Image 1 (cartoon, rainbow, N blue to C red):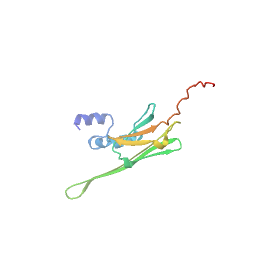
Image 2: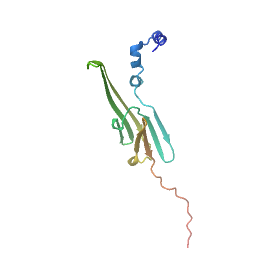
Image 3: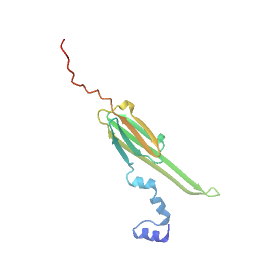
Image 4: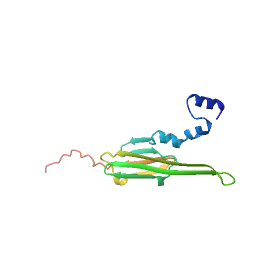
Length: 145
């Protein structure tokens, strides 16, 4: 961080240099922003798709369940970092905890038995397939013999 940046941060009431990197940390940003991940919901003729931003989370950290007509997505992750010098003296020890929970009301007509989920590149994708609708009955003339 350059002295000009420090001056600028100090003028705005920000903590200088040493603490700046910690206050700009994504963990703290998410914590102070409420910790709710960005989510997109899309629909087409066959399904609803819910994309949830889950960077840094493994699938083992995430729980997805359906309770009656509610889809519940939750995640919990802890992390710990420790830096030591050459004499094994602890110089820095940090820990973190991140969690979130989101719920969505499932509309009628969703095949809850076939909901699937995948996670790739920090995005959790949940597919909610629509039930196969009964084919529309066409008006059919019946001839009298």
